[in-house]
Image 1 (spheres, rainbow, N blue to C red):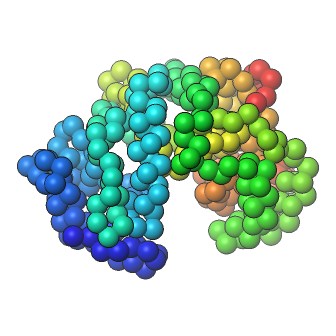
Image 2 (image 1 turned 120 degrees about the horizontal axis):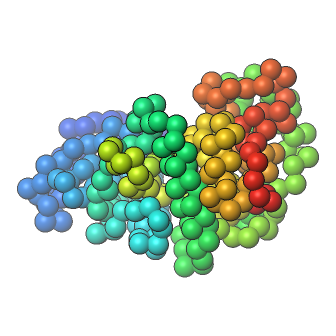
Length: 312
């Protein structure tokens, strides 16, 4: 029911075609014994994702992203029941047709934290970031060895070298002004990121958008989207924390890192921000406040500065 998707053009033509995608999802659900359940497509996310009735979620991975389906199923299966915040239970996964893969998972309850954040009172925000810090601490404490066959990047130092080599071009492609671009090589050269850190299981996109909360109690009810998971330096996960969870609020970041048990070095966090697989510094500068000096060192402390324990 779904065609081969190996190029960006095929991706756009297929994934954006809801009639085609819905037909494929309905066919797959029928094969999985869920043909009578209503399908509701979620509007967000890089992959097509459908609520299947009240109890299941079906995530589809086109040919070009099929390995992400393997990753998500393995990581969710490994994590289920281990974190203080619920993660989806994998009910089924595997190949569909024409190179597509799927993961059928349990549906988490709650509303997206990013969508309710503006109406969350300050005391509840402080409690929520505390819960996120506690969950992240548990995630990073888990042994990643059972997932080494599906999660990269393997050699962390080599990964840093690859990301550093393309850092300026990546940000230039996003439209970063020259005044920032010209600082990147010297800044990255001056920040001593570990080439062989303690290996931690990383979510890599710790964002409000990937947490669910109970709308009444404002307690965390879910953490999802593990397809970009990696194994590497725990500080890498603080890119999303500082930009998309605490939003350059040093008091919220201090609460989160206190719950986590360590604080991240601001320059390490900004260096990883520049090296992150999905880094887009112009976007972050639009979303967060930037120091008037326009220096990366000041930016690091504005976004990732917080009082706390020794850095990770």
